[in-house]
Length: 172
Image 1 (cartoon, one colour):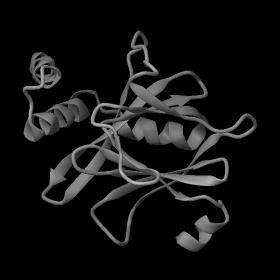
Image 2: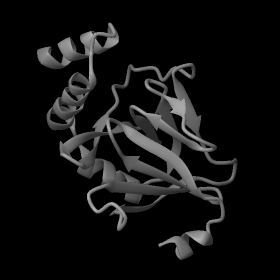
Image 3: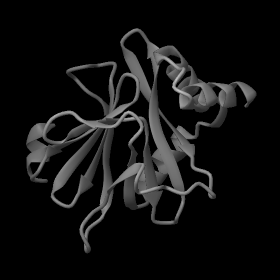
């Protein structure tokens, strides 16, 4: 825990680099990771909202952004953060950790993704893409669109990959 606090202090002070950032993610994944439980919750529950952190956040093109983590707010009220870390030269993997109950998600620091009034965010699939066999993807349906979250360097990439839900079957 002390090493994790020190790394976060250095990153917060702007003294960190890519390797320190990766070290933080690896330690967090191994010390607090509950990725299997996160995947189980995705399959069993609806997601009320996703909050993308704005640490390292910028628009990539029309609809893609890079972010440090995404916080999933489940229908039972639990919050879990999803991020990634490098496991090999060209291989990244997701990890998920519970979010502390007393942590406030500041709208100025997190960008919210939510479904329209009568719809919801639902888990579709978790797979390794054929184009990049070592890259993990997570797909969710939001209204009539598919939101794809990709484990990437050094964080995650989020984007809308399909605006018509029926096109998803053609995409597979």
